[in-house]
Every structure is written in structure tokens, then in C-alpha cells.
Image 1 (cartoon, protein in one colour):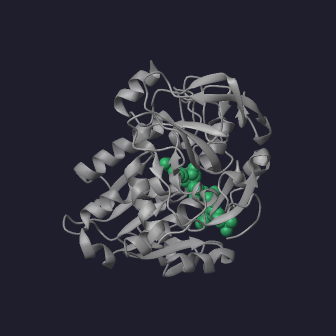
Image 2 (cartoon, protein in one colour):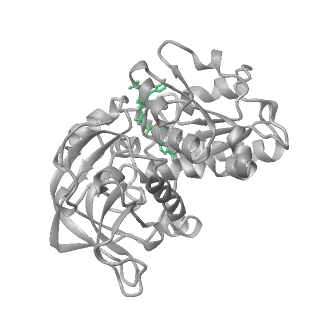
Amino acid sequence: MFRWVGSYFAPTRFPPPPIQDESHLMKAVILREHGGPEVMEYIDFPTPKPPQGSKDIVVDIVAAGINPVDCKLRQGPAANFLYPKPKIVGGDMAGIVSFAPEGSAFKKGQRVFAMLPLLCSTFGSYAEKCCVAEDILCLAPSNYSLVDLATIPLVATTVIQAMRPVKEAFPGDILKSKKIFIPNGSGGVGTFAIQYCANELGMQVTTSCSSKNMALCKSLGAQEVIDYKTTDFAEVIRDYDVVLDSMGFKNEETILYGNKHILKPSTKENPTFYLRIASSPHGKSQKEESDFPPDPLGWTIPESRIDRVIGSFTKQYLANHFNILPNGIRYYFILVVSEKPALEEVRQAIEKGTIKPVIQERIPLSEAVRAHEIQEAGHVTGKLVLVVNSELEGRETAQGKET
Ligand SMILES: NC(=O)c1ccc[n+]([C@@H]2O[C@H](COP(=O)([O-])OP(=O)(O)OC[C@H]3O[C@@H](n4cnc5c(N)ncnc54)[C@H](OP(=O)(O)O)[C@@H]3O)[C@@H](O)[C@H]2O)c1
């Protein structure tokens, strides 16, 4: 029932789930109950088969990118109708097509990447195989290994979806004169967002990170970098056009209501934007947020609690139609949803060389528990990626560190 309603309103969030093929097993990282990283098991699990009548593509996964949301969903709790258990963890993947139905736009052997829907399916990306709907699968760029490209889909889709209203408001070269502040520049979202905004859109980017990552953020395209450990951004950022915030749980109050003029006053001709990527502190589950009553849907991620989501989208509507925010600032709340056009856009950018994956560590699939421990500590530079099957593509290395 929930999926039926969900798939009506958001078909790419709630596609029909694959069938479990009990006769063929694959290596996968699953969880049977919510909890710390140790609840994840590396086991043999039935492979996915496209549901009857679907045009899904089967992909042999080379690598699975890790995102904070994987840890938050693992921590839970989430009702089974949202997050069916046993559940293969993960959403981001890159791999090679092993089956494409007749008439499909894809062919066996092609290199592809995608963000799998995070909810309502047993099958995630921490496994040797997945089934993907054709309309969210994209050919992978040719100039990076699939291991590295597995880190891209979720962060790229998030940032591209967030920046759409800004691109619409400032067509052509106008965007190049605009200043954007991207807090948390050294994380997964930040390292992508700096490159996209500076190198693809030509905007003037300021970011914040700690001293160890300042050189990296500059090399990615940031013109100014603030050390968040020594400087309060609210004291130095003035009259910006856009804030793209993946730490809104911490910053929103100051940016919108702190009377600090972080954003310019917004006008019809020259709007200013606060883009709030739904986010929550690392390692915190809804259970631990004792100041709030339980979410009516049993939703697992604090940032996705139904009351906050409804509240934030209502705020977005009121801000953009009735100017309810100080200085008329426009407000957008972002909850990423899988899509192909964003991946097509990023594929071209990566092939042009304006965007590259930034990877802290490549970790074997069997060490997913360790990978989640690192991710959850909240200090990853760029991304972590789980290597599932490096032999599928000759160029991958199963281990190694590089930024
Ligand atoms: N709503 C959506 O659709 C969506 C999509 C993607 C992500 N998100 C959310 O967005 C948030 C960020 O995601 P992410 O992937 O970028 O996380 P991440 O990669 O885990 O971020 C880690 C980075 O944050 C930096 N950091 C920590 N505290 C900071 C501070 N006060 N100021 C500046 N930087 C700080 C750390 O730097 P140091 O090591 O120097 O401390 C580290 O490099 C998460 O809550 C995630 O769930 C939401």
C-alpha cells in the first residue's frame, strides 16, 4: 500500500522491487536488524531477478560508494515496509551490465553507474549484483575506474538537484558573477559541490573545512577557504547570493535568522538562495533525539522524519510564494531522488575533466563494518568506497589510499 502510493507520486523513489532468485547466490552485506556497524553480515544471499514484465537491467557490481545515509538507515529503526529486512545495505554503485532485456537502451558489457532507490527494496548496492530500472541507470564516464565512479551518483544527484533553481534564476553567464558559500567542503557532498559550482557553473566558491583539508578544497576550485575550527563563518561571510548547506541542522538558524547578512537581501531580479540539504549529525538516530516524539512512520533518519520533511517543504512553499523569510530569502529543502539526467550531466563533466572523484579509501566489501565505523566518525575526506569485484574491470585496485 505504502509503495503503491509512493510509486504513484515518486516512481523513481519506489520502483517495483526485484525478485529473489534463491537458486543463485552472491556475496552481499546485509542486516537483519538495525543497530551499530556490527549488525552487518557479509554472507551468501540470493541474487536479484528483474520483476515480471519489467525492463530492469542486471548489473555486476564492481564497487559500491558509501554515504552517511547508509549508516543512518542501518542504525534505524525503520519499519519493514520502508526498509525490508533482511536488507542489502547501500545505494551507490558502478558496474558492468550482465543482462539487458530486448529493446533496452543498454547492452551487456557496458560500464554503468547509478544511485539505487534507498527504500522499499531488499536489494542495495553492497553486493555482487543488482537490478536497476533503465530510467535511473547511466553509462559511466570513460576516464575513471568504476571503483572511483561508484562514489559519484548520490552526491552528484543531490548537488545538481539542489542547484537547479539557482541555475534557472541566473541563466547563462550571470551565474559566473554569483558568490556561493558551501559549508563542509571536505565531505562527500562538499568535494563534489565545490567542483560543480566552481568548475562547471563558474561561480565564486567559498567553503569551510579544517586546516588539513584546506589545500584540497582550493585545488578543487574554492577561491576562499575558512578553517571551521578557528573561524566562525558567520563572522566573515557577508552578502552572498547562495548558501548550499549540508550541515543545515547546525547552520540554518544562524544563516536565516542570525541577522548577520550572510545572504544579500533577496529581490525579484536578484534572488538569494538558502539550499538546505536535509542532514543530521553523524551517528545519531531518531531514538537518540530524545527531545522529539517518535516519528509517526517510524522513519529512521532524523533528517527524513515525516514531521520535519513536511515542515521543511511547507517552509519552502511559503518562503518562495509568500516571502516569509527575513530579507525575502528563497528556501529549498533537498531530499535526493534517483534520476538519470543528473548522472548524464555529471558524466559529461567528468569526461571534460571539470569534476573528479575524491576518495579517501578503497575498502574490500568484506570489510563493510570497518568502513561504516570510519564513515560514522564524521571525518571522511571526500568519499569511501567498497570494492566488490575489482577483477571485472582491469584497472581497479582492491586496496589503497589516495585523496
Ligand atoms: N538530503 C539529501 O538528499 C542528502 C544527500 C547527501 C547527503 N546528505 C546529508 O548531508 C550531510 C553531509 O554529507 P557528506 O556526505 O558530505 O558527509 P561526510 O562526507 O561524512 O562529511 C564529513 C566531512 O565533514 C567535515 N566537517 C565536520 N564538521 C564540520 C564543520 N563544523 N564545518 C565544516 N566541515 C565539517 C569533516 O571535516 P574534518 O574531518 O576536518 O572534521 C569531514 O571532511 C549528511 O548529514 C548526509 O546525510 C543528505
